[in-house]
Image 1 (cartoon, rainbow, N blue to C red):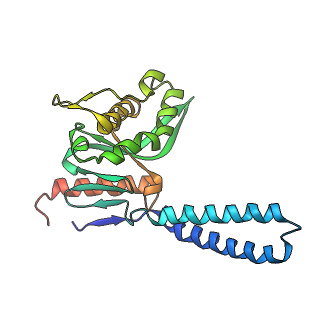
Image 2 (image 1 turned 180 degrees about the horizontal axis):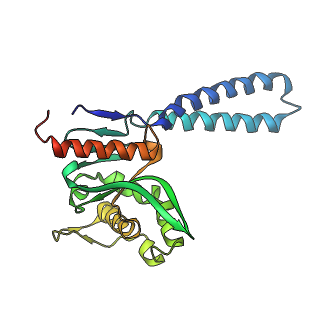
Length: 224
């Protein structure tokens, strides 16, 4: 199995935003030479918007080119704040993430991964990313509280030590993140949530790709 590199669709927006921001700024500067006195406030507003647009695009361009690498061994998630790696053998289930509203099932824009235990994530999660993930995944926590899948107490930020299944006591950012991971696993049944913004195709198609890769590795363990 060759390495499959996933380039997020959102990454294409960075260059576009930089271009729009730069063009808008140049147009604003050109207009200001002739109409500054008449529409000063409008031109100032357009200038600020142009600069903000350019820097949002720049931030997107500085993110890793590939958000995910799918290899024979497993999945590597790459984020501007760090990464995690999980082997296929450590994954129990891959599926969509959903909530029930009344009689309707609503799918959320994430791919869910349930692990056989949390240790592979603990051992591969970088500290900076561990500090960041609970904040990025706050919409999941909020939705779980609204749907009574979590109590407010369970959803609160928890800085106490976290004890793993093999009795390790974790502290700091990793413990903070693992409390969050545990709460979401109670609510949704998954430990890892990959946002749709990190994908190169629709969520359901990506779930099928991951399941195909996992199945291939299990059926052909000796393939190079």
